[in-house]
Amino acid sequence: WRSEGQPGIVVESMIAGIPAIATNYRSVPEVITHQVNGLLVEPHNSFDLAEAIRLVLHNRPLLLQMGRRNWEMRTQYDTDTVIAQLLRILNVDAAAATELQTTEFLAPKVAK
Image (cartoon, rainbow, N blue to C red; front, side, top):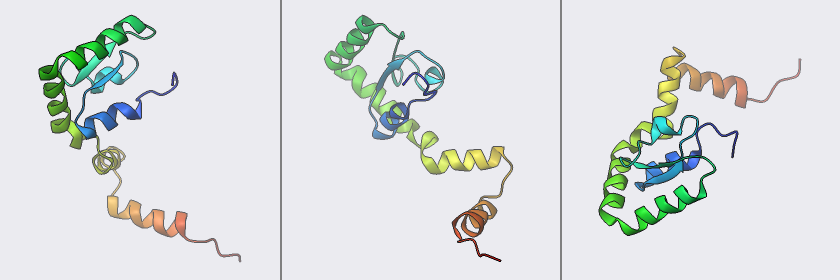
């Protein structure tokens, strides 16, 4: 998707411990370092994409190395970690946020 700033599949590949092959676009290079935990190709370049796929398929040591690196990095991007970081940035107490969500957003509105 052109409008997706950080494709979910990139993070999903990290969590699964497999390297991602993605375009060098928007925030993707913030998560993928070329030939460290995945491969980056230029947008709209099908030849480079095919070459990246071929490289991973024919270079098992590189595949395993990048997959292992993603497995080591996976906790940086799991849901609980990201939510905790966001709450910390927003200076919101996690317990208070949970209570607010439960009482104000999930409770039915009472007609007066």
